[in-house]
Length: 584
Image 1 (cartoon, rainbow, N blue to C red):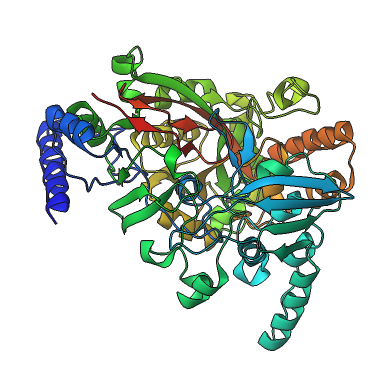
Image 2: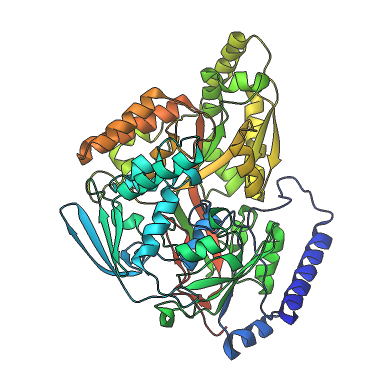
């Protein structure tokens, strides 16, 4: 209790100071809350000297900011914060290495490949409860993610692996009769080319070699699940919803998860490579206000923070600041199933095109993000692999790099043509954005620019859970969303927009797109595959059901006494396995 009380006192002091300090400030462009989360539960103080003693006398503790997870189950964890945590509390056959990119062995220690069959040999490793991790845990975990009844958003990744029978299971129609469904699905599971031959040997049969295969085996959805424990805690609807109903195979365990307040990770003493792990604890509170976060950083209460655009001029040249990029694209999703007059307009191609070309992305980056965001001319971000080694997709298909040119006059004309086709004036729309100051400024910028072409908007900021619920229920007009590459190939983006996809949250249907995607999956010729990828990007951008905004660029601040945090341009954002907090 003492540790908790100490942290809460720090929080109350910081929040009160910020409220008093900002009471007379203009709130325009400032977020009320933020899409990040954390709360510290170690013995701490806003005094840097106390923080020094804490680090040097006993534990190595790292304090940062995190968003509230939506799920920590490998079946349902799908958002940035979920995947970051899963990457640090679980482990697959493979994992991302210390350089941030190399794929190295995780729970596997070696593998063979012959006649379209991979054979992985597991190392001696245990779960956090001391029980051995086996090949059967991998078979059960993977097939649970593939089970169509669970509707895992990342189930489609198993199709990308080219594992025999995986796509048939993931996309199969579920019989209405429960007993019949159980029989049919179990038969499909038995036909999937994943089989534990014994405790230490996992056989994986594939229909061809996927370039991303080993990289996908490092992804947090492809980790083991112990069947007995999974079923004892209540199965798929319960596993991963609390810190107490999970087993851990990675460098850390979840010591505390107070929902909407804090996630605390602790070193996993049962981890096979625990001697490499130097951090004893990671505190991740949910601090919603940008100014509060920055004051906490300045006072030494957190060790790392993403830099809001309002602070770039102050900190950009600091030794603690680093400009980072991610293989990420932000876009707006336009709901093709919206009701009323808004729905009629959102289904009108001219109206959608007007929104897509009715603002200047470079100007938006400057106004809202301090110039850190890279304007998006298409869906695929810079740096993603091309068909040849050493050439990225954007460089190979330069004609796709500027598919969305700002054209104010044409946008106004298209709005008038849409009005004539629909026969009613343009109604007011709601634009849903993330909870941060920079996203508030993004919304305000677009509210002005789209207003100038004749489309009125209101702005609504929501947290991850509310935004996800609105998207699942199709109860929105336009909503901000984005995607960070799960693996280094354009299909990590282009698989999202298929009409039957689990991430299709707006009713977008293009028979042409679906057919070209089938053509991609049918060819093993890399040049042809990437030409088809370029065609897919042109189709989805020109349909304007998604409006690309920018590619991720941001400054992070990290105290100089923090070392070894590995950031990944592709996949989960960070790995803490090699991190340390040295003497301050």
